[in-house]
Image (cartoon, rainbow, N blue to C red; front, side):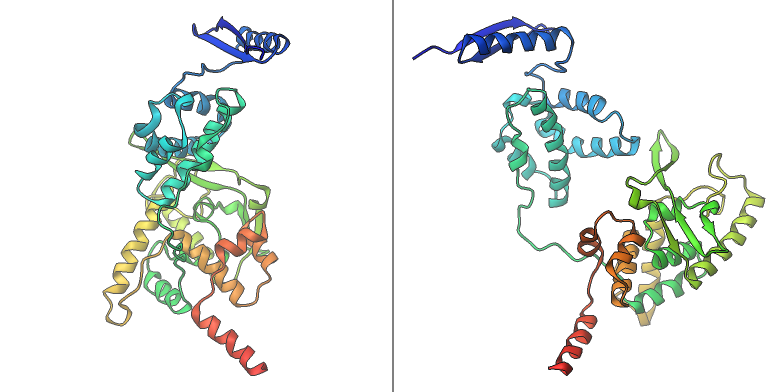
Length: 363
């Protein structure tokens, strides 16, 4: 039996690189290719690089085009993994090591997010010939096979209670627009007056407002929609139009007393000092309102919800009232109909009873 051929050379990292092949022709080709990569600096890392070192190369090289907010999200997710496996050499990672690390993460959601990140990181290592295969693909993220909780949506009665209790607050028009258009909270907070056409009763969704804390100073940026479907027009209902007209009058009064932040002059929604609003402000207002509602004797038991829950509530109401799914997909700005139906359309128990009653009458 012919012996396996071997070749070695010192690469630009000062490391001895060893190659193997079954024939002289193949080992010569491999050596020629690897030296070419090395001479032209196409080999971005040595095979003994640690995961932490590879992450830094991955974020700078493979994700240089990403928004700062996206990179910040990657960093937050990677920080959960780094203490557990960041010090390990990537060519020593295996499924057992990775699964043990993932088992120590706090939740299935955290594991899902970190797996998606690590799979991408190590896929690039495979493409760069640092790894033969990606061990992160087989990691299990659900440790307990519990069914996922339904997203919290508001019933029609709860919606009325919320709006009634919020009518004198600064967040009232935000809630009306969210419940009447299904816009994402970042899209609502990034809405500018040039995108509100009162004459045609149309809202044009063209951007989102992104908040990034930076050394004690709040940083706000406008970002374009990630997909073409996200750029859309939404008709205004009478309630939405009325709320926006009232908001315009309020904003004009605020602008007389306070100068806006440069670049944010045309924002529809702002604070009492004419500063941008971020999602944490909306979450805080929701918590305060839920506590207020639960202090009322007639409304105890009102469960918390998130700003995104308002979008879920809008979608569910639309389906219940007979809107065609393709129309809803367009309004929500989704690329696929399946995403619309799977993520945003919930069926209340009362609706199930009503629908079954109709069928029973037919049988």
